[in-house]
Every structure is written in C-alpha cells, then in structure tokens.
Image (cartoon, rainbow, N blue to C red; front, top):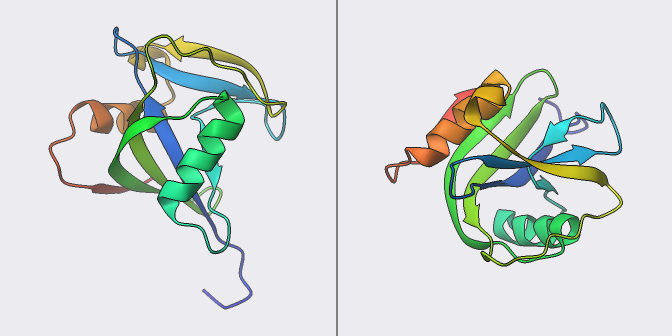
Length: 134
C-alpha cells in the first residue's frame, strides 16, 4: 500500500438488549443500509475517542463499558473496523442524528453474515481480541 492510497479505519459499538438483539441504525447516505453506531477515526484521535464521539453524535447518548472484541477487515470497501461491545443506560432516550433515519433491534438470525459473525464474537467474547477478514 502506497502513501497516497486510500484506507479507512473505524470504531463501532455492538450494543445488545436483554434479548441479545443488536442495535442497528438506518443510514441516510451511501447504500442507506443498516449499520452499527460508530464511524471513522479522525486524524489524531484514538479508537476510543472516535467510538465515544461517533456514538454521542449518532445516538445522542454516551456508550459505556467498551470492550474491544475484534478488528475486522472488509475487503470490499478496504476498511478496518474496531468493534467494541458496549452498553447504554437502561433508560436511555436515543436521539438519532441526521445521518440516520431509524433504529431497530435485530435478532442475530436477521443480520447479514458479517454482522452476525461479529455479534456472535461479541456475545461469546473470552478476552482475546479477534481478527477476521470479510
């Protein structure tokens, strides 16, 4: 990879409810699909700073107790994603940013293959940060 090549790195929150459903947000941009809260790490920012900033921007609340469960390379879009298992306050009132149209709690069976694998990694985390390629 050359110095002028494009490469992206992001930090994202995997948030579960009491039924082990995953919180996804419907984007207003790009393919307008469903994705985890989070986004790109800005220059000079740590992955934790990016996680907290992006989640605050997108959810209107602070995520808590982040645990890095894996770094996932997505070859189709040439990006690495740091996935953190996080919690939100039980009584949290989520307020979406203009980047998202909706939120939904998804059963694992309803997720795409890569989202399901990452969710299962988070649910079964044993303390060893994983690395996978999709």
